[in-house]
Image 1 (cartoon, one colour):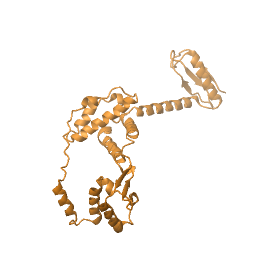
Image 2 (cartoon, one colour):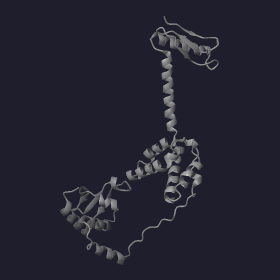
Image 3 (cartoon, rainbow, N blue to C red):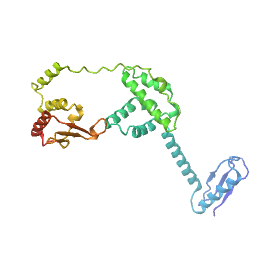
Image 4 (cartoon, rainbow, N blue to C red):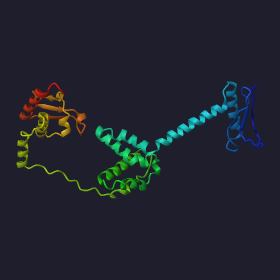
Length: 278
């Protein structure tokens, strides 16, 4: 026989809102809350719900424990979404999607090495300028990297502000804390030096395709990576054009190179030498 009753008083050792039941000869107890947080009417409703469970052969205590586990899992999931590392992964996926795979991979590597170990587990609202200052100060010997980390954190917080997650960007006050050295570009070759370089290529003992790549760089004025990763399917030597697909361009747009007579002659030699290779 199944018995369920609501304790309307508060005897010694018992809590208001306890339900005493008998299920398969056992007497488990389920606490639904204390008065006045749980009123009598609500307690009666919960009592009826649990009694119906017992009549179906279900254990209300196990049901309540299962509900508690679901609530805890939801809280843990919500807590993870609020963490800096979780949102910065969202930023990588959504705001860096148009960047090259190499740039995205490098950005994630920087976060994994320098940022996430420090503030990855912190909630967004808990990250303060002091936390970011500690990160960039640890990189003071590499000022370019330090400033890049500050800018990256600033951009992540900018996106969080757009998503209405936070209202303040703690990286902004730290602008200029570490000065980047002025960029020094390599000096270009003058006309006389370029002539010497061009003539010296014929005297080098490097592999034929290495020399051909150096010449194609000058003929096409493309980037080194675009030349070295070129495939035969991109060339139409009869039409004297080289079509570089968007996936290999920094701008992510397809690019057509019109080849000079010297470039076409060079590529025909390369094709004769290694045309069966990719």
